[in-house]
Image (cartoon, rainbow, N blue to C red):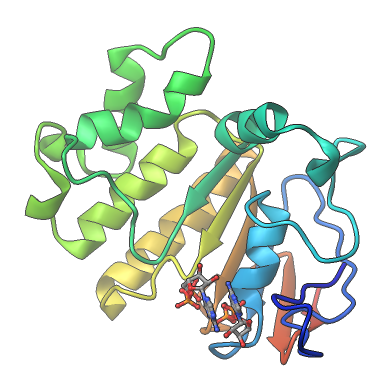
Length: 215
Ligand code: ADP
Ligand code: ADP
């Protein structure tokens, strides 16, 4: 696949790239700002179509599916964690974590929300608004929200980019451990190649070129 944001320029944010993400693996893509990491992640996560090429998920091209099918996959099968948390400011931590469950047929029970909040260590904050939490806590809530539906894949875009080093280690270690424990595939982009201790696949993105560094 490739990505050009403008038909009028020759600039490729993503040069011809082929990538296979195996189920249950931890995949890290590192590179400098502007190298094309978010572009690739957004394409893989069903958020932005490639200019050319396909993204296959369970033998179907994501971008050939209709809008409803695409949003079902993004909502039920994928989880997302972003640099700036993207929590809904008007909603309590509890309601933020339970947001993705609106896509599930049977709404999750209160105990499921409490259990995941405990796993992330934010159970004392369930009735609080996000703005009253520290950045680290907000990102732990975002991780809880990403995990609540038992997704197949979590896409994380600079999940620690806005955190101090203590919280950065905490969030990245929890993401890695919880994904491994639950057999969730992780695709994470970052500028820090050492953020994740032992990824199954480590890639570098440079000027729109993806290169496998270590398997
Ligand atoms: P990274 O995530 O590594 O910082 P991005 O994927 O955000 O890199 O950006 C790659 C290149 O594509 C950059 O030159 C950026 O300015 C450009 N770009 C990203 N998003 C858009 C967009 N929506 N429209 C135009 N250019 C974009
Ligand atoms: P990040 O790399 O943390 O995801 P960015 O600051 O690169 O965030 O991009 C934030 C948003 O701005 C994204 O939606 C991206 O597509 C858009 N963007 C980035 N670069 C450009 C650009 N040159 N022109 C237009 N939009 C851009």
